[in-house]
Image 1 (tube, one colour):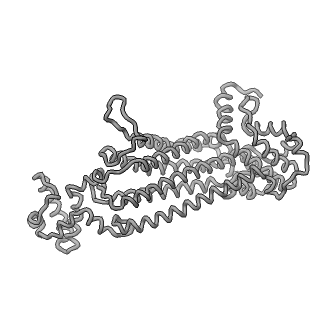
Image 2: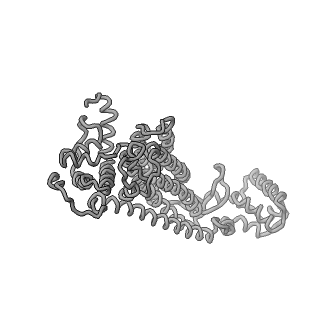
Image 3: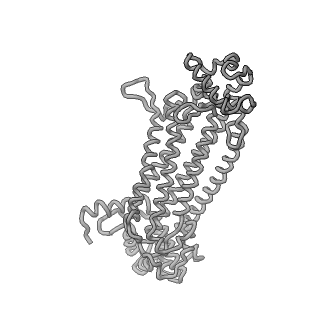
Length: 487
């Protein structure tokens, strides 16, 4: 068949190129598993096809010629040429490109999701390490873009890690949705051959089988869920980037020269551009749900190209942006340094301790909250009108404005004292931070162990499928002439 040049260029050649560059092994894996499924039913030629595929995958697949429609038919043609029609045809029994393609797409997405999860886990470990090192590094915390209260840099960084732990779980949930095997669903009603779909999933290293054959080929939500989870992660990371850029502007976060760039005209400039590149990647992730949503929106519940091969390039771009953003952000934190004296500058005038002064007055039963708040507020306004700061307060000022000239009230204006009193669960006090760090590090350890097991499960299954497929049927040799055909 001869296709129109434009159709070849914009559809067939494009999809073939993507499949050859990114999906080749996944196609061979899925085809081999299905051949074994037929072989398990006693179809000898299917066993031969499984062995033939293990040999064929060792050789380069020809490029797009325009004579064959796609990557699958290129493999099919090579099987016919090298191993004969009986072997090649056996593989096609009950197999549809519908379930084959979606098995390949999901397997590819699972592998890329594991890479993103690993990168995010590494970033969280970096944040916890920095949090440990900066448990006592004073920081001016902001609310509504204005200085609010003292905390520590460690408390801030571990707070970000806690947020990212939920992004990790959302990505893990997207992985769980994707990690289900459609193979054996055939066109949509199921294969006419009673292949063991659970065995197919196990051989391919999937976590389970997609329970419904119609849903297996019609669903596009798995890709959409990935896009939403990545966009959620991007939202969280963008907030960390915003704060790092704010501190970099003030000189509180010095980005390493090896990840900075200078100006073509201003010799004094060292620009923290790595963070801008991170932000650019994150912006791409924010567009993912829109793209994937439209590829699913108003399509019939069945096999269509929109949410079939149509999701591959968008997903590839999202995975690329996600890995790039997380990797660059992690190296920015590793290679750069915080400047404690700059981060604590907002504490020097002690205005952010005003709430503590109110609290000490109330806790000591000197004044009610209704009395203490306006008195402290009035004192601050008068100080400001005279060009003075809270740091310049004396006992006479306290006596005049509050009615108490007590040295304890001046002690309340020390940032370290403020922090030491925040001992509640998750609080800023060193003891509370230590408890949280133990919890967070243990959580991360368990997640990394699970991640290692997921990778190992897939790696072990796919290695066997590629190298010793017939061992999965307890058959180590072929009672046929397949080896002669392949010689």
